[in-house]
Image (cartoon, rainbow, N blue to C red; front, top):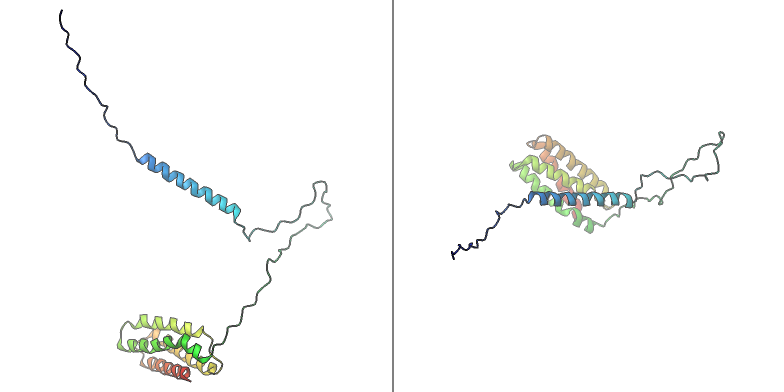
Length: 187
């Protein structure tokens, strides 16, 4: 008897295919975009909008319009009563000093920086913003007229300084206005 060679057991693995992740990423992004669009469409229909025209009552299907009848127009129905803007409260001098005092102190410091030539244009811009914030606060009636005049002088001087930060007359006028505002706060 002749012996036949025994087949040898060899494990053969197929070559690994690199799995493409690009397809899964694109699918995920597509599904997220689709979900966002669906949420947007649902929100569009669920959120009430005030710009929709009022719907006129419709007549029953059996009635027919006559040529002499005027068309029905819907008038907008107000949803809320108009409100009157509240009058700003006039603070007492101590509360007013607390609200604007810091900006008056920094105005003097800012004018010193302008005189020294340290970023004069940027400093003038900041002082103009502070002056506007000061103007937005209602002054007490005891100093209202003097305060308004001094603040207007200060703002005019800042406008002149914005055009020419080296203008010594405008700088002196601004310093005088700040001194007057400081004196009014101390009264």
